[in-house]
Image (cartoon, rainbow, N blue to C red):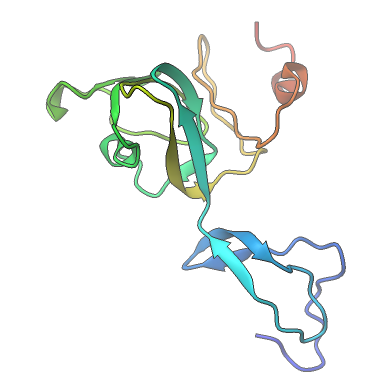
Length: 168
């Protein structure tokens, strides 16, 4: 709440974030420039990333940590579903009972191969909490199935500069 006569601290050029029920939301439309006591209308949306999947195999990662990471729940937002999902932690095969699935969850910052069985490409919406591009990703010796968090393309040397000299 604003207090009369108290400087709230924001100045021109500051980035202002919005939170609803403890979750940061994206500003879709509206004027996010603040003036003295001006009323502004904004369209807000919980962070969503649409992963484009094509028929056959897709290598995907997301910068959105799903609200519910259970793989069957996350896959439920993909119309037509996925036949197979391979991850560093295991495999999900839609043709097998749940008790045989070794891949149980999908998380931001990790990489997955998804076999999409439909005949045309589709967008797979993942909703949840966006991870910042500077969020540290845990690595271990050997191969790592690491996802990509930034929302823009970068040269490999820039994207991996924090671990320069430690990878092959």
